[in-house]
Image 1: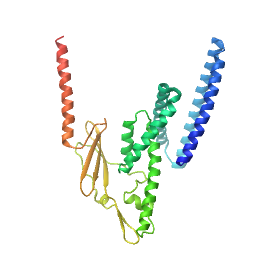
Image 2: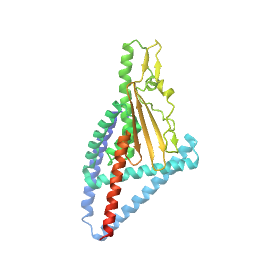
Image 3: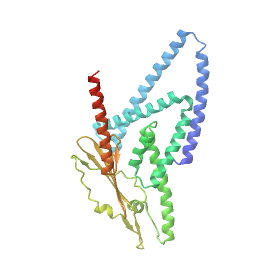
Image 4: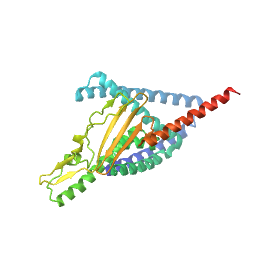
Length: 304
């Protein structure tokens, strides 16, 4: 679905939502004319029907999704159940975020949600233009926009990346033709790190000790593709990501390298980030200060 189709669907949804709200107001006005006993009887029946319908839908989703995973992807029942459990967790988080927005903003939550998404799209686009990978973009957006669910952010980043890759590919193809290159394929662009691949990345390494082990990046260095006439398209930067499970925390290590510099950023699972030993020392000192303050406070309490 392209941007125009998505906007058309959003306009249609808003139109239908407005009609539904008008009908709801009419219904509420009628309910307010009833006696307390009749009102509670009708509301109770509506709630019961809603719960029954919701349970029926979820049971159907469970059956159909299980069958689909088995038929289409030859998954075992244990794998399917693990998948469905993840789906339920994602749906729960998404529903919780939406309900929170509704309770805080009422009918205006849709407008606020749209404004927040527009701001998020702009930031995601800027990060893509800066060469940041989608996983890191989603981590940053989850921190910056806690009011949005992970599913909202994941879907938005995928849509933005798809549009961005198309635009970049069109520009590069136009430039390549001007240089005499007959054809530049999507695979060429991915190999040259000009666009991010849609393929799921290979499983990342996990290191079970405290020492970071440097990955062998000799193959990653050779990110170049020779076109038919011999002209080379080469990446300017290369990035590697390392997942490390240490004794106290798990870490994500981001390494970016070009001809002039090397950059390393460490992201701890609790959100702490550092790029140098000096920054890590500052983090340690702050933690020591907090411990000292707690000790002095505890000592003072003993003398109360």
